[in-house]
Image (tube, rainbow, N blue to C red; front, top):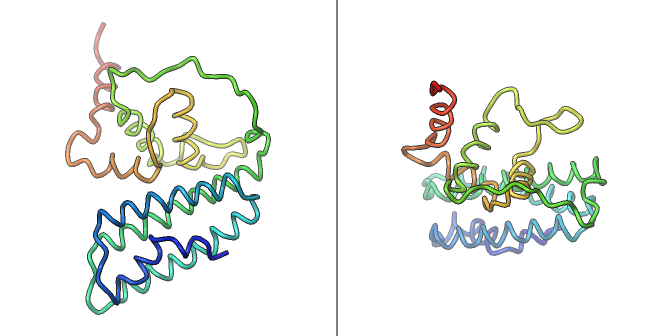
Length: 200
């Protein structure tokens, strides 16, 4: 159950409050490896066991976040950011597992039909990410599951990747890359608005 607590990411974050702080670049690499391990657990482990592992890890990272925030001497801000990113990633993977339990028919291996649509290379992949982030931040959510609940963002990303044959990357990074843009955050959205409002 504690297999994800033996990862380099967790061990580095756990030691940072009392020892030398790990660099941001190294934590980024650790996070990438951690995300791959979480994905592998979801893909290769039965859903119930995977959920137990993720729940246990979720609790431990929340505890770690409280510990870091209660320090007398504040640590580098990126430590908390990586902990929050990890918690969010685990949450999204848990939502995907719940969805797999509720709708197993969508996860049956087989030769699924290929989408005939492709995202044009004339437009960057981050334009798709921009659209998805905008949809995800809307209230109420426009993308729903069959039971009427909001579709998890990581599921939306994967469906759009498969449908448009475009690589967007890790769902947590998809949001970060869009929302951290200092300018042109809505570049593609503004181009859409211009096209819609343009008189023929």
